[in-house]
Amino acid sequence: MSSATGSRIVVTGATGNVGTSVVRLLSEDPEVGTVLGLARRIPGWSPAKTEWAAVDLASEQSDLTGHFAGADAVVHLAWAFQPTHDPATTWRTNVLGSIRVFEAVAAAGVPALVHASSVGAYSPGPKNHAVDESWPTHGWPDAAYCREKAY
Image (cartoon, rainbow, N blue to C red; front, side, top):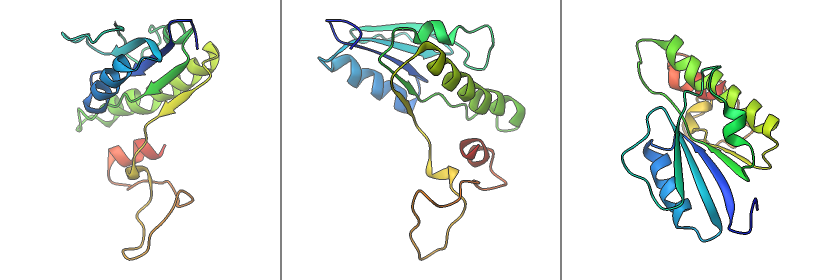
């Protein structure tokens, strides 16, 4: 733990569907001292023990290492689904932004990283046969979401 008052957890994509639930649950956890939510836009709500920072993960001007410094864990949930007609934009955020998160977590010496992936990262499997984590992760070639998750 980073302090006597509890763990410091940073959540990327903190205002997304999963992120809002994770932030709320962390804010209610007595073992968590502070939550730092990173999002493109700071929301109008703020649970107890939660601070916010407006951050574009793909921007080199964003000081991710600074935001992660002193954290006990980073939960990486950020993901852009739009604009679907502009794969360069989603690639910049989803793939290059994730790489920046991973590098900043390492640079800041954060001991734990949770990264949310998806079944969409896996290559199509046989219809009547279960596959496990050893199955190839090439995604579905025609779907940007799958390609970016697989990357």
